[in-house]
Structure formats: C-alpha cells, structure tokens
Image (cartoon, rainbow, N blue to C red; front, top):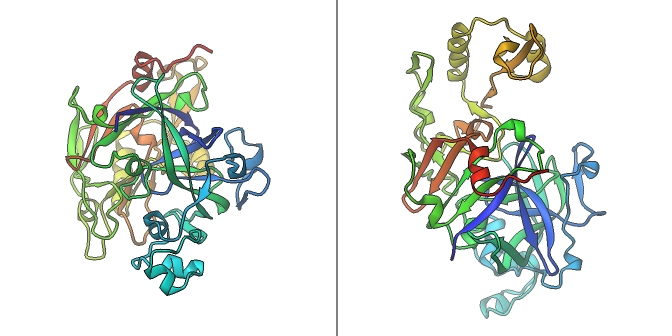
Length: 387
C-alpha cells in the first residue's frame, strides 16, 4: 500500500478528517480518534438521533451519510471478522446465531445474513448504536492529486447515539481501525496538530501522514517505547517518567503511570479523542501545588469556577500580542484530574499535542515527539489556503 496524506482541520475540541465514502461519494467530517478502533458516521439526515446532545443539527460541522444514495453500500455479513470484532465476541458463531442462522447453515459456511446491530461504548460514557456497513472509501496519496479507491471498507452506519453527535475515524490498533483496514498497521502514522488559535479556520489544515513517510528518520524526534496493555492491546500507551516545572523536577510520579497492574489498569493513554491531559490523584494535586508556587500572577478564581479548570491566572497584556494596553488576559492550566476507576491511569490529550509532531511507529512499537510549528509545516506542504 502506498503512503496516504490526509488534511486535518482543527475545531474547538478536536481534529477533523474528511471521509469520502460511497458511490457517488459523500464527504463526512469526523474526529480523528487514536483511542478507539471503530470508524463510524451518523446515518440518515432526518432519522439520526443524538440523545443528551446540544443542538447538533444546526452545527455546521455536523454531516450525515445516506447509505440509500450509495450504489456500493451494503450491510456486512454476520460471519465477517469485523462483525465478530464489533460485537466483542470470542466465539465466531455468536453473531450468526444472533442474526438467526441455524447452526447447520453456519457450519457449512452458507450463512450470509446481515451482521446484527451493535452498540459501541466509549470511556467517557458515550454510546453509539448502528449497523456495520461496507462501502468504498477514497483516500489521497502522498501526491494530493492522486486519489485511490478502497472497496469494502467496514464502518458503523450509526442511527442513534448518546453524547456523540459527530462521527469518529478510529485509529487504534485493532482490526476494525482505519490504518488496519488499509494495511498500515505494521507501519505507522504521524500528525502535527495546529495551535488552538486556528480552530474553525477553513484556510489551514495540517497533514496526517500514514505509511513509510510517517516513520522515516528525520529532525530531532525523541522516541519512547509504547507499553503493551495485556487487557487493552489495541490502545497506544506510554509510560510517564516525570514532569518538570521550571527548575523543579517532579520526582514522585506514581508507578501506575508507567506500568500495568494484573487487571490491565495503568499507563498513560495517548488519545487524540480526549481534549485535555488527565492525571491521577494525588499526583495531579501535587503538580498543581508546584505550579502554583512557581507563578506569582493573581488567580482568576471567577474563571476557575465558571470553566472548571483548577488554575487560572490574570496575565499582563504585555505578554499577549494584540491585547489592549494596561489590560490583562486570563490563562488557565488545561490539565484535569483523572476519574477513579478501571482503565488508564492518565490520558495524554490532543490539546497538549499541539505544535508537536507525534509519530506512531507501529513497526518498532514506539512513539516519537518533536516540537514543531505545525502551521509553518502545513504551509510548506501546501495546506495553507488564502481565504
């Protein structure tokens, strides 16, 4: 498989990739999510329903796929490996039994009934329900003028959700993920997230590179090993060794941020689908105390109460370009406390990955980082458009 390069657009709480699906093609904008496998899109402009969501139908970012308008769309079968995967089944016969096939038909390999509807859950509490669908997806090559068609791509055609109004492109390590289905799981991918000031700016995007070019040696990339979780092997984890604030080193990083317990809990999950970095208690509160003692600006407690962030400061406008003279602007620490429970001990969110090239070298089982002006990099790659 040749390399892919897809543009990423920044929105307020994540990064969008455009999926070109169907015949004729329909362009659906979805979030890039390295913390899950399933790629899914809202299905049916009039019938799609998101429970406990804001007014998503009037959100300009919301787009839905209409399978009835695609001549190449079809329901996946109950015997496919993707159907078995989306249902988390250890028994390859389960899904066809659920679909209504007789055991004799299944054993003869003649059951072609559709994959039963699925429900897929997310760590933050979101749920999506729909039908596993196959259709043609179109991707850009390293040359943006080269378009390749990938037939029979498996994705969720989702009719109802809870807390999830916009679809996701799953970039995890499982067989359902987009890199896996396109043959890149033994290679890797990289991204360089634009700074927050470019949110909702249609004139600039940054490259998502998939394939050999993503993992090629370059610059000052610093690599660290990925940790393999025995319970959640499809997620990308690394170990946090320490955090430095000014000249003070935080040496009390708990061991659960760099290793797993016998139940598979622990590690630092790298997740583009989570906006802010989360750290466990009491380490998080210790970090807040160290930061607070290092900063002398007055606290903006009213902003803290309104925003939910734990440390906000009134910073003189002289340190902020474009602000009125003798005024102040508020700056907040965009970290949050990790909820107690099973799973990762902490999450490395997308906000803290801005202006950093992040390389997922899946071939060697490592992740690399290097600081980078992602807007400048995007401009050099022709991804800045004059509006």
